[in-house]
Length: 411
Image (cartoon, rainbow, N blue to C red; front, top):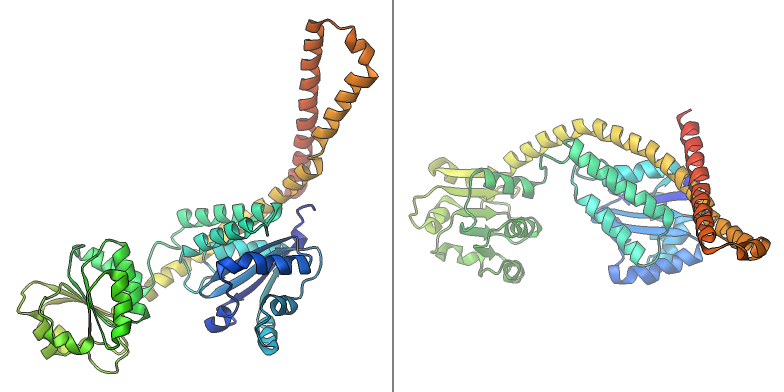
């Protein structure tokens, strides 16, 4: 099958139309993808298929010369889903075809369609999705060509624009602030709360070299889970007032509706230490009493401050979107030419075999008697001449065909 743009389709389930919980229904564990996706690929007569799943996006990129009903595909791929769910998901799908699909693929990997614009993790997720689909023998020549160009375009976006230069997530911003404050990697970090935000923050800190943690949480089992990841001691929150080992950084994020760390409690765990402390409060409402900030000399990072920086950085990233789109548009034009060139190669890939066969027939049959009368030196020269002609005959028409394509595209 030739690489034909009109056969490319993308079905996308994203945060723009669906709640992440609904999107999560479409996730398939990596060890199940091969069997389940191969089955629907064969059943629906799909030539190539790639499956992408992130926390807020599930996409099916496929090459097929026939129509594909996304509702039926969902029902087949997820038989456990109620029919009403399949219908709902099908009604809220984003569908892209041909050049529009290529543009979408470039835009996704370049992060301008992400929930948080500029988060470059998506380029790795796209690459891994292709590698997995390729390993499961779901992809072919067209998607190989497409994803190679997608990755190249995304890399160009991240190196030539500022779309990803300024962090916008609270976790990333808090870490960058710690770096600005030159907080030592062996600093004692006291963690209050072991929910998703604090857990993400702590794993991020550990990844970047921090190692001295202690965890306090209302539910001990949750504290244990996070402490195990951090290789840290843990205690119930009720024991915080008895903690005597001091701290350099206090990180707090709980779901409480009041100040968890009062002035009195803070001064108890401070243990009369005089050094400058860093307090990170990413809870809503805030966990750390304003009285502490008023009375003590501290570096205080609040959720309000971090959110303001995040909003400012998002505005900077937003200004870069136009530059990204310009790169994507240029990449789309290049890809169209690339596909046409590749089609020439595919059409002519049998030419070398045919030329070789003609040469062998000429030598072994048509001019067999004449060849037998040649001395070894003459035979060697003739072989060289025929080899040269064979090579030029293959490369010449190929080059000419590509030049004609490029001329037609530019006109």
